[in-house]
Image 1 (cartoon, rainbow, N blue to C red):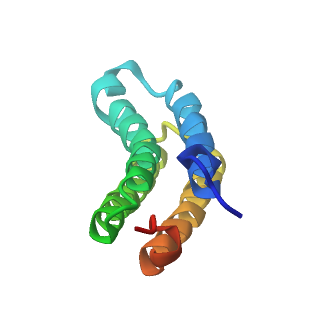
Image 2 (image 1 turned 60 degrees about the vertical axis):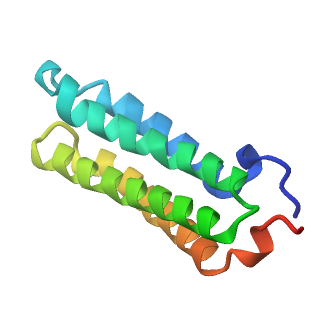
Length: 125
């Protein structure tokens, strides 16, 4: 399949969808976490999508494309850490956080696949 814009990429769609789920979950976090855990998990989850979009626009240059995908990968892993903290601090039930964490496992696998094989995605000169 040929993708015209980043929003058509399955990995972007998955990341955008789970970022919405993370946002909804974080709305239940205590007020004192507004500028720490709540902010961090929201920012990292959204950053996955933003970096995927940015990587898509950097496909002219393999190194820039892969570098930005690496940032998206890091943000996805960071989001998993914040989800772990949410459970550990008892702000989120394990059964609520687990599917989100697992969604990021799938997103990470897709990002790593892009990193390992960028050639099909690069713009031809």
